Amino acid sequence: MLGSLEFFTRIVAAVYSFFFGPDCGIFRDVRFTGHGKRVLVSGCDSGIGLRAAERLHKAGYQVLAGCLSDQSDGAKKLSLLKGPHPVVVLQLDITKQDSVREALKKAEVQEKGLWGLVNNAGVCVLGEFEWMTQEQVEHTFGVNVLGTLRLSKACLPYIRKSKGRLVTITTVMAVSSFPGMSVYCASKFALETFCDVLRIELSRHGAHASVIRPGDLVKHTRILEAQKSHAQDMWNAMDSEQQSLYEPYMAAFISGRANSGGMLGTEELDDSPVFGHIEHALGAARPRARYMSDKSLWPVFLRFLALLPTTLSDALQSFCYRVIFLHYGSQFAEKSAAEKVR
Image (tube, rainbow, N blue to C red; front, side):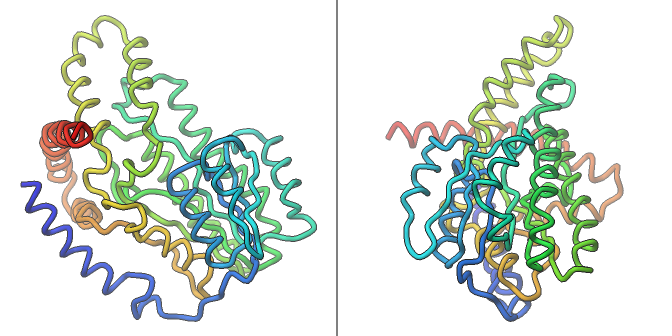
């Protein structure tokens, strides 16, 4: 089954690239080059943010790389990038107003301006809603929603003045939510709504707002590195009735869904269209409102779900949740572990 899935995924990827890739006819419009334009990217400690900062630096942008820790591997790597416009590494915690203020002060945005913002920083805690602790819910919204809005609000006057770009990373799950990801999906849906309104508000000033929806890039990021710890916190917060009810199912979920991140993603991070889409959103004269940055069959499946009656879509999601993510997810995790041993 997985072999067939891989074959069809390659077919969809080819069709996607032909019709919707950033270099196809739909996207073939006037582009600006970096030429020292100043762009702030949040969440550059690892994963998408780190690679986006590297790509934008290579494209000629003056990258302001926001890192939760200025001593992280990503921060150290970016600080070594030189050239006409060396990367400026900023210690940035988007959940704290003082941190945002100090980062923008260090970046001298008031004096030198700002062309673009890439809202990338985010967190994800997997688990059914009943399992999750209130602290996990509030932390997810505190980072993904309130943190993103806090940084956007601070940067907005400068983006408006430069007629620049505000780009926000959401998720392919913004098309349709999925079991086990209720709080994460809710936070990303909030960002989609925020950006829909912001796009209209900014258009009056000649600036643009776009959202980018990456697919399953979990194995290339650290977004789930604390998932086992989160699961333990969930378990500890349950009462005896909940533990008795959910114990076998929760174990299957953790071993299958949480440990199999990347099952539907690209083999290499650079293979993802997300980075070309970030560059397009920042540099095109006519950036898109939304970019679907997933080459797999997943976006097609989610759009298909949206067309079905609720009873059918719910039944199909439940089936896929049990069979693909719990059963095949467990096999995928076991296969990955065996490959690491070899």
